[in-house]
Length: 392
Image 1 (tube, rainbow, N blue to C red):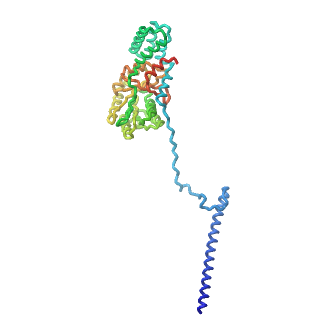
Image 2: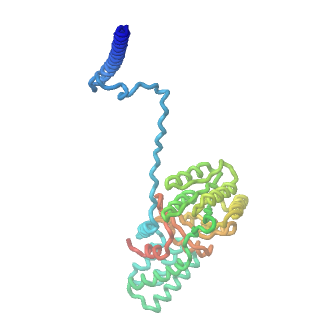
Image 3: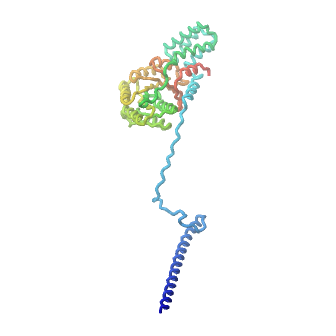
């Protein structure tokens, strides 16, 4: 009886084992069939693409995804390469090249004196007329001619080399190399503030843009204030100048109060801790009292936050006496500290340099030499005089 129980247990165990093997085989065969099916599809896809051998796991292949479900890639922003402004030394060399042998009336007058084998009374009269024509002014011309005649006579000048040496000394004295021509752009507790003023048509906004390049070349952090709110184009122009060298611009809406824009520019300059804030003001006729009073307001409002270190008056070097009239009025309103002479190239009357300094008692600090973006140079008295005396 016991034997039958044992035999029955063995049979049941055998049946269980056979059943488990069959189930396992069917599961294995099922997985194999499914893998073969998936691999076949992958192989078909691979074959259609011209690569693969039909045995690549589907997980190793790219899947088809709805484009709307894919997160957009961030837009690639191309940062424009900034301009590299020329160094001041390069600009001085250009100043000399532009003036050497040019059609500058003052240079012609000086060379006239040196080219004569014999200097007689007629020579002196011609020389004097040429200097006055060159906008040197009656007073400076008389002073220069009297000093030259006296020295030529006392020192017995007999050759052009000696005459050139004396002429250089006297002319240099007239231009006055002792005047401080440095720009006050050193940051203290607040940014240095430079106010640029002038009448319409002198190239004032362009000068501000070029001055920004000069300061950037000196490794200064600069901020521009577009306080010429009467012309939207002026603010656009100034902003373009700034963008080329990586300088921010504060601007207001067209017709906004210029003083408020200037105030905000200085405020931003203080917050950003920049070195220099350059403020472009609206060009205005010196004969319009209301506009000139408004310019005075701009200066007063700015000074509530920081002192105005420089007030640069932009003058067109070709305007002569009219430029001097403008200069007098601006000096009375905003206390001009320096002059920027634009268009001081072959067509200018170089004598304006001496006359405007005498008239205002302030130095010419910068000169514009042409239309190029870096055609604004520090004025150097010796370079100026030497260039006038060069024969080219």
